[in-house]
Image 1: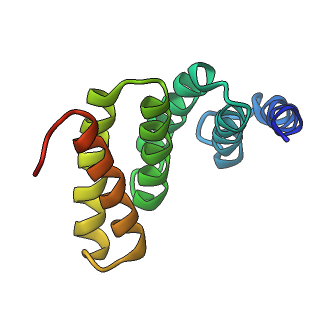
Image 2 (image 1 turned 60 degrees about the horizontal axis):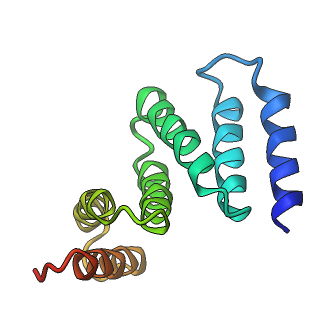
Amino acid sequence: HGPVVLALGWACWKTYVGRSETNWTRCKSLGIIGNAFCVSSAHEEALPVLKVYLALIRRYWPHDENNILNVQTNISNILSRLGRPDETLVIRREIFARRVAMRGVSDETTISNGYNLSISLNEVGLRE
């Protein structure tokens, strides 16, 4: 599926790249190409794309906290796959703290983010 998803991601990006930076469809197409790189195991390529996508969301849609946290989760997963545990840990701590504040400790997504954080803590040899 990787090559097909990547081709569709590029097609989506090319369709909307001419629109304003504030256009949600253009922004979302950037996220689609970033995620397509992930599906294709092109993590080095996905990372800068998703970082730009995150920056745009923070700039133009700062109220969309759930989407921001989802993109940060994708970025932390990429960093983990690239063998960058210290950077992964910093992001996962932030994600978990914000999820707890938003949804509480019993929420399924919070629990999943807590699990990811525990993996990162273990990878760097910390116990909290």
